[in-house]
Image (cartoon, rainbow, N blue to C red; front, side):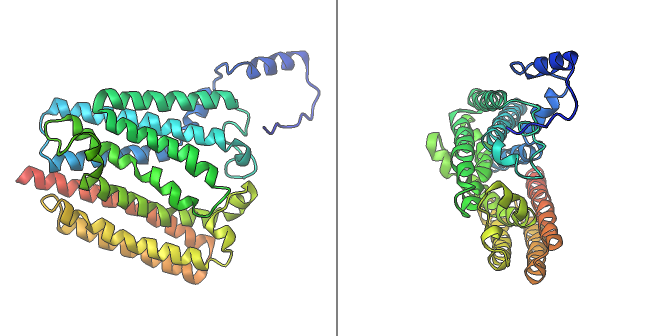
Length: 337
C-alpha cells in the first residue's frame, strides 16, 4: 500500500498520534466519510432504484394489494439491496486497492490514501453484504436474497479479477449490474399475488425484461467511461476495449450498436405488460434511444474525450428519465382502471 513520504522530522507527539491512527481501525472523524465512499453511493443508489422499479412494476402487474404488504416489500427491498450492493462495492475496492493506487481518479480512495486499512475494508464489505442479504431473506424471501448474493459474488469474484485479463469484462460486468432488477421482481414471491414460487420466479417476464434493459444500458455507458479514462485504465493494468482499440473504431461501433439496442429493450414493456404501458413509454424509448445513437455517431466521427463525455451524460439522462416515464405511466394506468 503506498504511503506518503515524510519530509519533516517526526516529533514524539506526532509518533504517538500516528501510532494511534494506525492501530486496529480505531474510528477517526473521517472514518464515516471513508466508509460511505467504499459503498460507491451513486452506484448503490442506482442499483437500489432499479430493484424498486422491478418491485413496483411486478406488484402493479400482478395486482398486489395492501399498504402494509407494499411497505414491507419496499422497505425490505430498499434496505437489503442498498446494503448488499454497498458491501459488494467495498469488496471491489478492497480487491483493486493496489491498482487503484496507480490511477489518478482512484488513488484518493480510502485504502490507497491510507484512510482505511485493507483488513477493515474487507470486513466492512463482508459485513454489509451478509447483513443486506439476510435482511432480504427475512423480509422478501430466499430468492431475492440469493440473487443479491450471486450479484455480489459475480461482481467481486468473476468480473473484478477479469478486468486486467480480457476486454470482455465489460460484458461480464453488466450481468451483476443488471441482476438487482430481479431482486425486486422476485420479491413478490412471498405475496398472494405471486405468479410463481421458488426458482420459477427467475423466469418471470418482467424481471427478464428489466434485466435485459439494464444489461444493454450499461454498455454504451461504460464504453464511454473507458474511452475517457483509457490512460488511467492502462496505468492500472486493466484490459478495456479502448486500450486495445486506440483508434476507437470498435469502441465507436460498440457504442452505436448498443445504443440502438436500447430502443427495442425500451419498447419491450409494450408487449410484456401492455396493460401498464403505451404511448409515453414508447415515446421515451424512441426519443432517448435516438439521442444516444446520435451522440454515439458523433463520437464515431470525432473520437474525442468530449464526444465520449456526451455519450456518458446521454446515458445518465436516458435511464432515469425512461424508468420514471415507465413507472409513472404504469401507476397512472393502474389508478384509472
